[in-house]
Length: 334
Image (cartoon, rainbow, N blue to C red; front, side, top):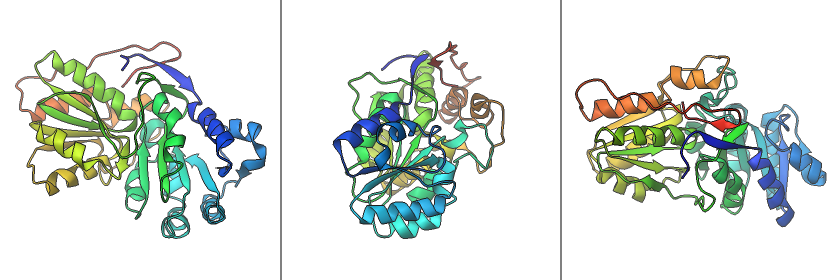
């Protein structure tokens, strides 16, 4: 793995989807009037005969995708995460999830990665999609995983929901890293804390672990790209090998990664203290920048360090969060 500030890539998903479609004729690209913003302007330019512009009508778009899947196609449906889940939920449930159709719903701008306020922030999308029977839910962490996610989900039985950051995507993993659906991965070993992170919170989790090791706190960082089905075996093993467990997600703490880990730990009877870092039963506000929102709502390296320090019962103030100033074209965790 690299250390921050991380280099970034632009449109890794868009390029990867075009490459996949050239090998798989059944792939269709469906856009909900956010073509450039969801990187599929590349698909429209390269393979226009398999590109469908559904317009700003997300409910109809999901029903259309279900019908296309019934005809043998594998539609990849694109819009912002909030428009991909909250607005067309009934159509996803009845036209896609209930018949178990292979529709891949790609939701950009997860959580507070957009400063656009509650109308544009998908802070409950994991909870909504996780509640649907048979729905696979994926939240990838960096450009290496983004490049691999279309290939990884194409042959999954039934529907899939994928969360993707928009814009400049950090490169955290080395090129040899492989995204394996249904598998969590222990990236850093440790025996004081099991820190489970998904998506955009992985960078902050790694930064917190690096900062705490200098203060005799051993943190195991577990990357959880697949929230459903959760890799319960790895979660149980990691939690059992630590004194406490902490989750970190760019999402409400209700119904997402924190809830999935809590359920697993409780059902295993492990009896470990658990703290969930994420939005705390609130809508977020709009702002000029997303980093401001990550800090305001506690989705930050500083919050992770303070949470771990507190749950371990360490005396005195928590250590300072490390700063890794990023230049143009670089990404640093909040």
